[in-house]
Length: 550
Ligand SMILES: [Zn+2]
Image 1 (spheres, rainbow, N blue to C red):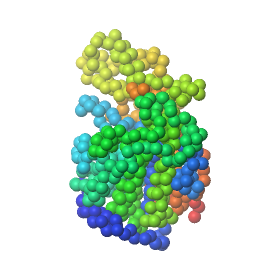
Image 2: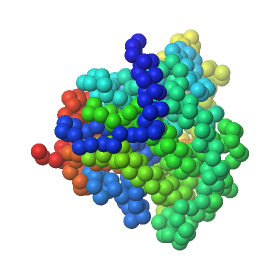
Image 3: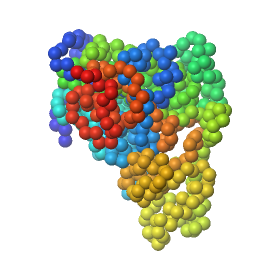
Image 4: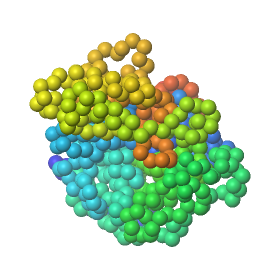
């Protein structure tokens, strides 16, 4: 299917051994074309982290803020602001309605089970466990694919703690994607990319960096707790996580090789520090940026997401994670400068979605925020359907909160009209008082109703073969979860959609750009910097304001 891939992997492995000893010092070269696109996604990074923490940044974020183009009004324009959909947009320029990446998980009525966004039954995991992962569910192409189409010598690699981040940013034609398997504490890949683990990967995993003793306890980076108070408020906030482990220092639970330990490790800044080390090794192995054929390295930092979910955007933990990530990015940029020369590297940075502050923090400010339990939606719908159509009707095939998949076969078997079933569910949902609006597939396939500002967001997140039959938009400031603490994202509301977009490098005019833009603009804008033809697809346009006039 992809001839030459295995040979390429063997060559890469051989090259890696050489490159570990000596990376050729970069020289000024005549072609002027960037040697490397370095794209960074920061999972769950809200735009305001850039401004709130700006005075404290000394590393990579400071460099990007000082020398880069900063887009301050970039908002996703799809509902269902989850990790899979966000990452599928970042380097493709395609919205979920065209890429089919509508959620992290959807229900498959034929298989009668949930399907993970990067799950692919045709491939097997390499070095890990669980499902084999690939971009098979993604409909479309990425910037990396187009780079390789222009020049097959271009190398494209994605790496992240999360499979979906690495795979969806890298794209269908990528040379490799790597992600962290918490069952073993190793970086892994799948047979979609190679037949066996590349040697560099096996060797890197054998070093067991995640097991190192310095990763067992998380303390504040900076010595002054008062500074944390000023920038992030008190450490002891009961609405964080389990309501118990809410203050520094945080101990990672259990010890290697426990899966719980590796899972917890992602809840600390160490997850992203370990990722960086693996990414640099991948860069060496694949010789990214080593010659004039423009390569692409996409790195997805994900500890930010786990920490954000656990402690909330205004926590001392999120502040500390961003202070440490600032240093991690600084180290990355220094290393890329040493190897490639930053004057030959275009850097892009964005996020897959934002997040809502902790409900209790909002309430303390007078916002009518509230926590919602999934059963507050499921119970009324079940009661209403049972009341109207009889008990044990089996009409709901799957409830993936807050949305519903109906059993269309059951509807036919009972001789019902789908529209009648949906209407009963809609009424029950609206009567809960926590629902803003309910969308059936028929609604989303029809014309926009007047006065519905959310419709366009819901429509852009809708792909009929995978989307739920009943899509529920909760009211603003409601957080849906079974957990007692923490927070999250996933809605059509602005706090989940506002993300940073930054670029830095040759051809980029530094400054802050306040015009409205969308993450779909990233791929065609990077392509413009590379003089690579790339269709706009779902982008609003190329971000031409930041392009230097020649
Ligand atoms: Zn995410």
